[in-house]
Image 1 (cartoon, helix red, strand yellow):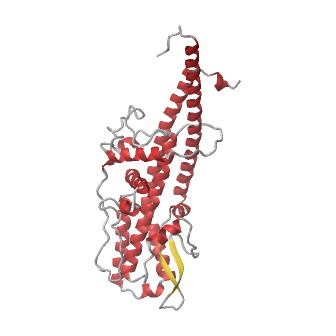
Image 2: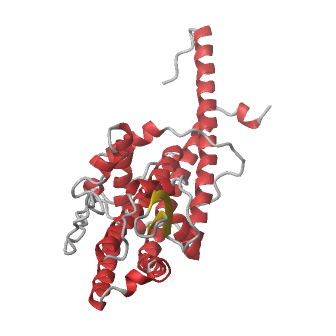
Length: 361
């Protein structure tokens, strides 16, 4: 007989309690990894963006770049850095969680772009570019802090982080289907602030109100949504940069948003160019060259940033490892929950066969 088959209901509850505590530590570890990841990303993003623009200016559009006056080049560089800095201010765990909540809500409603680019909520305003762009018009970012944090203090939270999460479980498990509706409900509550309370106490980091889901399954869904929000934020920055390149005269055509999305989804055949640069040839006649229309622009990809930055790559590997541990924890929790249900059912059956035995409360 398997040792777990002979476990009592009390032992099953103890196992579940231990797994709950382990889930809390895993969530704390996740927050720490994501904080380090975004700190490194904010630090390196301006350099990576300028490297991509350098390739576009010198390899793909040298004639247009040479034709620009010095003042034009200076203004263009300042605008690009300004956009990058504004986007970086929005690359925080909490603001990406809020964006992820909006993206999930958009899946259940009408237009994701309407939610994504609601006034005051996103990194750029809706960008409908026409032929008569005003060169003096700038793109605006909303820097208003989201309301989802309540009085949660990230700095205080980070001071409670444990150095390492213990090994979770070693058994191999298959991928489980994710309860997206549960995660969606949690994110909606998070956005309304109903899941948040006072900031964490250094003396009691686990029992205090927590800004992440505690269930391993929901925590994995949360991480996936957060990742989608990060790429969406970088995609929007890429679009804003492409608009500025068009305004400056460096590019003659704008890379449309659907093409950026299709490229991220692997649905567009790309030319071999530099990291974070997107070149697409369309079967449309180009009046200037009498050939196919070639669109050049930027598309900042999480995968290419991680390839170029070893520290980001190491953090991504740590996130993958933690995700695998959460899968194993999810399997263990399901096992012990099922075992506890079996034991409780057996107890009720015995009570029904022996009415003199009083039910245990």
